[in-house]
Length: 140
Image (cartoon, rainbow, N blue to C red; front, side, top):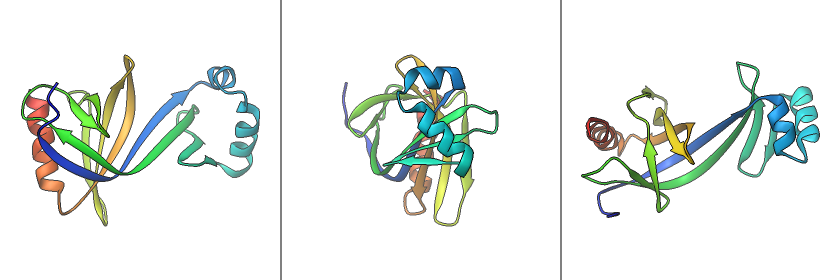
C-alpha cells in the first residue's frame, strides 16, 4: 500500500475503548484499584491513558496521543496513522465541532475488526484541507 498522500499533523488523537464492568475486571489485573479510584475521584490516569465511567455506565479507557501524523492517500479507503494502516468509518460517523484552538472530528476507527470511538483535533492552520481530504475519503 502506498503511503503517499496529503500529510497532516493532528494536535491530538484520542481513542476510546468501552467495557462492561465485568469484562473490565477480567481484562485487567489492576481493575479493582482503577475502579475504586474512579468511584472516589471520577477518573484514573496512568500515563497517557485515562479511565472514567461513561455516560452509559461503561468503563471508558481513553488513549490520547500528541502530534500524530496522518496521511490520507488520494486513492483507496485507508489512512496511515503514525505509519500504521487504519480505516476510518466516516460513513457511520463524522461529526465536526469548532473549538477555541482546534476543530474536533468525532468518528470511528476500525481496529482488529472492532469499531472504536476516536476524536481527532486539528488546528485551524490545517482544518479546511484536512476536512476536505476526509470528505474525499468518505466519498470513496
